[in-house]
Length: 202
Image (cartoon, rainbow, N blue to C red; front, side):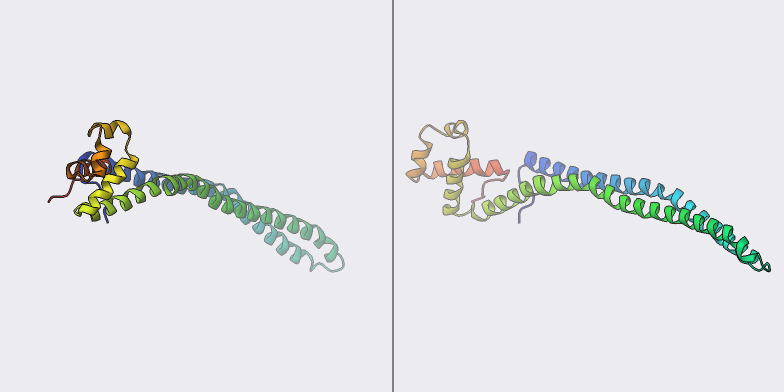
C-alpha cells in the first residue's frame, strides 16, 4: 500500500494536505465543543427557575400544612397556599422544560456545526486520496514488469493531454503499437510522473 509519492513535490503536497485536513477536523470539533458549552449556559436560568419554583412550592405546602391544623377554618385557609404552591410548581416545570430544550439544542447545533466540514472531508477529499493510493499501489506493483510498463504506457496514452504526448514525439502512439521499448518506457515514465512515482530501478 502506497500512501505518499516518491517525488518530493508531490509527497510534500500530499503531506501538507493531510495535515491541513487533520487540523480542519480538529478545528471544527473544537468549534462544536464550544457551541455545545455555550448553548449549555442557556440552561442555567432554567436550573435556577426550577430550583426556586420547587423551593417556593415546598415552603408553601409546608405552610399550608401548618395552617390546615387550625380548627374549623383550617381547610379554607389552606386553599391559597395550595394554589400558590401549584403555581410555583408550574414555574419549576417551565424551568425543567427549558433545560430539556437547551439539552436538545446542545446536541443538534454542534452536530450541525461539524457535519458539513466532515462531509466535505468524507465525500470530497477522502475519495480522491483513496483513489491515488489505489492507483499508485497498482502502478508500483506492475512498473518492474514489461507487461506492466506497457499498461502504464497505455494509461498515459489514454489519459494524458496531447500537449504532453507530442513532446515525446509525433509518432509516439505508432512507436508504442510497434512495441518500441524506448517509447513504452517514455510513456510509462509519464504516467509514473503524474502519480509522483519514480521509475523502476532495473
